[in-house]
Image 1 (cartoon, rainbow, N blue to C red):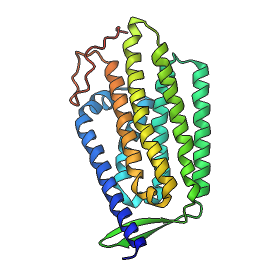
Image 2 (image 1 turned 180 degrees about the horizontal axis):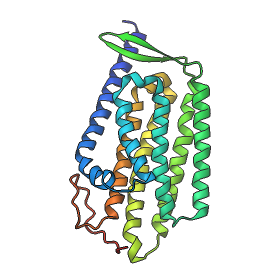
Image 3 (image 1 turned 180 degrees about the vertical axis):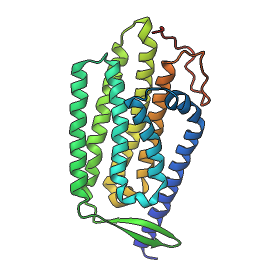
Image 4 (image 1 turned 135 degrees about the horizontal axis):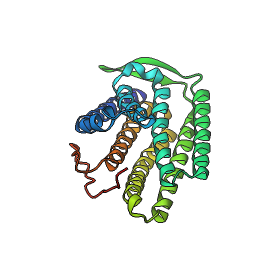
Length: 267
């Protein structure tokens, strides 16, 4: 085998392993949090916009990773899931700042710029790209060809927008209102948001550097994990938030998400 053939085989193996790992992680998280999902989302009426976002992120991510035949649509579907997660995060930041119009205008404007930048770069960069089935030993991989080397720039607006939300969450963590009725809820919003941003920033920055080094290999090997981890963490954030709004003595979480110390006044 030539050096190129060895590299192609290694990329194919790593891509298969990463997809299997990501799917296993998402199914495991789904199984241990299904009772939470049923009680906090499926049974609660009327369904809200946040409920639809939660379900799309949760099930869209599983379908995207498990269905190889969706490879041609993977970029668009992956971006829609990423944007759904970011909308959830924007709603959290908006709530942290007590529905401030200035904060709302800031994050919506920044989000709009991010979407335009990503769509423009992805559309232009993938215009000449083709996907072909390629036999690699006993495996068959979807090989993406004619991908421009500069496509790694796609991660810059995504990472920058997430960083903006992280800074806003950190700032509010030091400036939050010290009222008894809202302190616990704000603590949850700040804690979960900061943990999410720190973890996902590591994932996005890792993807950015890998795309700089080998964009074609990274498209196959890293996409699954870049979808799975944000989907799982954003789902957990929404479950935590829903539990914070339910009296703690009315239900117990099978996934052991403990919020027993949270007490909020009744309506």
